[in-house]
Image (cartoon, rainbow, N blue to C red; front, top):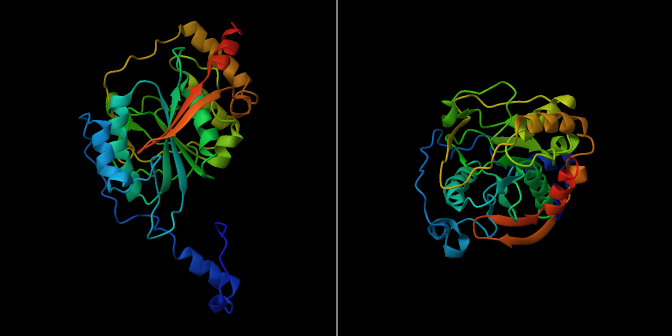
Amino acid sequence: MAEGVVENHPEQSSLGLSELWVAWNESLCPENSSSLVGHINVDKSVPKMEEVEKQMSREFGGWVSKGGSWRPTDCRARVKMALIIPFRDRYEQLSVFVRHMHPLLKRQKLDYRIFVVEQAGDIPFNRALLFNIGFKEALKFNQYDCFIFHDVDLIPEDDRNEYSCPTSPRHMSVAVDKFRYLLPYKKIFGGVGSFQREHFELINGFSNIFWGWGGEDDNLYGRIKAKGLNLTRPSMNKGRYKMLKIFHNSEKKPLLEIRKERMKRAFKLRKNDGLNSLTYNVEKITERKLYTMVTADVKDAFQTEMGNY
């Protein structure tokens, strides 16, 4: 039976369409789950991934399905959500992340899957390009209507911070301990953000030309405003995050002159630079026990971009 269609059983034939619609929606999960606890203490200790899998994976008697997915069985989830992480060589952070996030998302009664988009090779990292790839590849698994773009080193401290795209676009990580739980500047849209599918497609996703550190988030803010969309945020109490500082080499910052030039060019090219200009090859997709790993080769996109300088 197609989703959203009420099967017309003989015993229901006397009901009108409005009554059938009410009966169908009575099975929806509540907007505010009684399972939410509010503030959460973040455990920064680094577990072995195998230990986390044994705690949560359905294969070991837990509740998370292969590929890092789950949906409630006692009610119908209001949202189908894909959580997308850009990734390269941060396995310690990933083990902390999945240990923390799966229970939180379950308490929010979401139909979700965690996608980890890994950039193959050793060319400069392109966080925004990986987000775009994750969006495209996630839709091959399910017709998600909500997308959370999430850095792996940010861990939410309050489960009332909705991972269900209640409004969009939404900057979720508004109060990070690294910045003393203050918003660094008004136009920031970094760390964790959510989009309804239609809005992400409207702005043509992220720019694909930001190789190395920084710039893609400010460009994203400009794309949002250019389409007349409003940026929303949770309260500073709910949008609190801890940043993990664990064993990884940070990308080098590009020269300031290059970054400024790239920002200007990306804004001018936004109609033809994004979801509609993606260049990548999927090397493999692996449904791990607690996440789906998408490994992508993006060297052709890098070589094309370097040809512009």
